[in-house]
Every structure is written in structure tokens, then in C-alpha cells.
Image 1 (cartoon, helix red, strand yellow):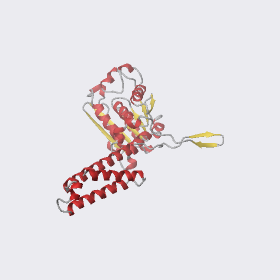
Image 2 (cartoon, one colour):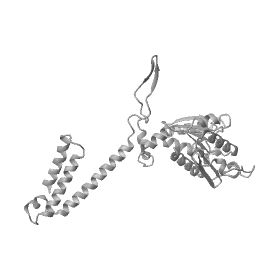
Image 3 (cartoon, rainbow, N blue to C red):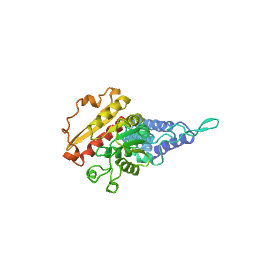
Length: 321
């Protein structure tokens, strides 16, 4: 048997040294294996040649099966590594103006050193992989509100590698927020929520561009903000703001993910009428009567609940991108 194994190794090595195609070495080894099995089946038991080759066809069938499994494993590992490896240049050429016109420099890589390891679990996930992570890196997402829902949304989108995230909120961090708004800390009580959230996101992932806007979302700043982004997430607790975000998103043709919660329950949906889905106002055509929906400050809310609902919003955002 060892003589045959040495011969197989020699054939494989010869193919590599002679520069033959990658399939040539494995093909010759497979051919040798077929010949050996055939000899065992044709020659009578006890033949001298069989003793040199191992003397048992069953042993060679087992060897062939193990070799097939090893080959499949190597191919699978190579395929996974190819999916995880970003292209050498993906982000387009950088163009700088000069006196006689623009000159194209070498294309800059989209991912910085260390990012492929950071996003490894995405890269190995079949539904995301390298192409999906590039989409996340190139996406521009607007998050309205950095409170209970915005907190987990912002942290998970930053961790996922969304390239540019704008967060708009006009409130400041209060001690009563910390029971559920995990993007803030006691040391940042009194800071604008947008700035506090931006600090946490940058600390989590320095490769993400974060644009904090210290203001309330309204009819004046809303149109420009929505027009500049690919996806909108609304985590506000104000009914008027929800309807305004929906109206402006519909007008700009941008998908909207809206979430809400109350005490022990919550809801999340993607509203994308451009692609055949409903508008927020289609699902909720009648606004709740004043006082019928108490706020968290009035009725309370279970601390982990915003994390659950906000986490679902972040998952839907990744899927949409």
C-alpha cells in the first residue's frame, strides 16, 4: 500500500513542479486509485501484485472515501475564505482636481485594516457575505431619536458597520433614561442625546461615520435629512413626529422602519410604498385620541423592552440594506 501512496504523492508533486493545471494532480491520483481498485477486483486472491498494493479492495475504498471528504473540506474552506476576503479595491478611484483636469489616483480599499476581522461573522453568514458587508459600509442611515428605541438601534447599526449614521434628537440625557437607554452613561447626564450617542458609537466602532444633529426632527430640517439618506428609522415617542417622518419618507421614496412601545409590548414594521408596501398612515389612518396613549414617563416601561424592539428594528435595517 505504501508504494501506491508514494506513487500518488509523486504524481501530485510532478504536476505542481511541471506547472500543469490545478486539476491535473488530483485527476492523476484519482485515476491511480481507480486502477488499483480495478486490479483488486480483477486479479485472483493471493496474487503477488495484490500483496504489493495492499491485498484488500475494501481498504482502498475507505482510503478513497476519506480522500474525497478531505478534498470537499479543503474546497469548502477555500470558498469561505474567498467570500470573506474583500476585493483589493472596491470603493472607486479617488479623483483630485489639478490645473489640467482631474487625475485618477489608485482606487482606495473600502475596508480599513482590521475591519474584515471585525465583521467576520457577517462575512461568513451566507445571506450577507462580502457583497452585503460592502452594502452596509456604503449605506447612509438616518435614525430619528436617541432614546429607548434609538439606543439599541444606533449601537447595533454601528457595530454592524453601517458606513454613515445620522442621529437627530433634541433632548438631553437624564438619569431616568439610564434604566433602558443603554447608549448613554451616567457620566454623560446633561449632554445632548445625539452627542452622547455619537460618542458611544464611535467608541464601539471607529470605522463608522457618525453625524449627530442636536435638534428636534421637524418640517424644516426633515426634508433635507431624509433626502440625504438611504434608509430612515423612527424611534420617537411622539405621534406627530411619526406621521411627519412617514409623510416625508413617502415623498422622498425612502423606506422607513418605525417602532413603538408601551409598558410591556411593542411593534415594528418596514414601510416601503415605492416597492409595493404600505405607508405608516395606511396601517394607522386614525391618530390616537389625546391622552389615550400614555408616554413612558406617565405609564412606565419595562427596561429591557426597548432593547428587544430596537434590536428587531436594527435587524430589519440590516436586512433592508
